[in-house]
Image (tube, rainbow, N blue to C red; front, side, top):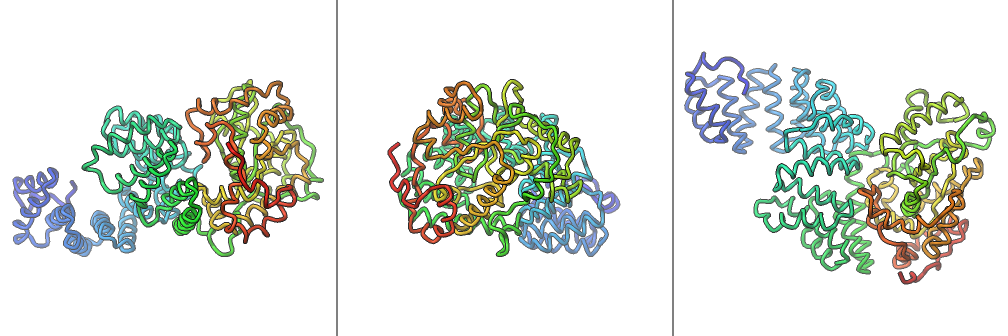
Length: 625
């Protein structure tokens, strides 16, 4: 506890000790009483007023505390401490704009004080001003590089503002921080690691925390959701169910989170009625809980209630657009492109001028699996990873990161990859492999499989660095793709914006597919098309075809991909719960149940339907499983 000057000038040590002890022991009413007894003799004393304000604040008498903190800023306008306290009570009272101004004043008065920077950053996160929070909290990290808490807070802001790479850089040394010796901080680190999709690392922290604190409710809830992501359903159930039965002291938010998790587990067990009842009973966690409506829509869809499913999806996308504008406003303006992208294009004239460079042969290059999201890329990846001669990894934006490197060096490079020379391409390949090595422990006797659906937008860069690479392009009926995307709660704000309406999504599909076809015709990569419908209708034959394309001697390991997938700790894609099942025909022609919703977008999709040989009656009744 810090005072503005020694209390001994004004009061005896016994009184000071009594007030401090009362506050520290959690008896703010007693501290208030003692302060009021002393104030008549010293009515303008800063320290007494500060203690009184603190005791009132602790009792949630916010208006009274606010008045005294404001008086302290008038008595000592140059005190960063008083401005910080004043800002905190303003924030607690809901006066967020005034609180921000007061925190800014505290920072201005003492730029070396980390406390107001931390509290301002957290307030900005609460206000969904993620980019501003990121800037403030990165300043906090610069102020104190060794502060674990500052790094975790800044990493959270980075994740929320879609700076996933920045969050990773901040959290890289997290294993060296252990043991944290702070349960709250360890839980917060696990939450942030989950936000950036580093779920296995989060599991390590949570399991360690629960080993020490078995009844920690928030840790158990988060670990249960992690176990569900690991497809460890029994462990998830065992982690959360006992806590629900003993949840007398839980907050409403914790009960709601538990109900949503139990609904997910019920859905995984095919208990559709139970999942629906849980979700309808608990409702959303707040006004911005769009994930609730995505989950509800999934249940309605599986129950065959298409009207209710579409109603829930419209609400999900409405709330999501309102929420994500805080992190990526540019994607949600009327003038925004259907699918935001900063990937460079290539013209036939530019490609003709590309110099011939030494590059890896096909067997020394990654196998790239691309396609519009929800076209079956994860199924292909799991098939390939099941083969001992291949090694895959979760989706990573490696080419986006390489482009950022080039952009920082000279943005003009992205306008024409022909300016890259041998040294440049060699260095970029080294960086690519270094990023891969950060994500997985490479088996050098296996060929790498790089699956990222929207790498189809980065074909020019892929071809510049790995011109001999084999590419598998996943294709699926455009209407089934669009329906599946519309029902998906994507992490990427750009992809979420593209999926905001069926109409915008249809335009995004056509624009990206048109660009892909144009660049394929220019670059002529070594590519095969894997049609989802053919794959699920004649799986062994299509597996053999893929093996032949990749020059693999035996396709048999790929046939048991589901068993291989179940043996994995973590599958970091939205279809993690589907790829542990054998191939089935559930997804064929699913869009026909929503035919009336698709009528307005069929003219938009017509060029792609015609190009790929799909018609609007294809798979109008899904074959049996």
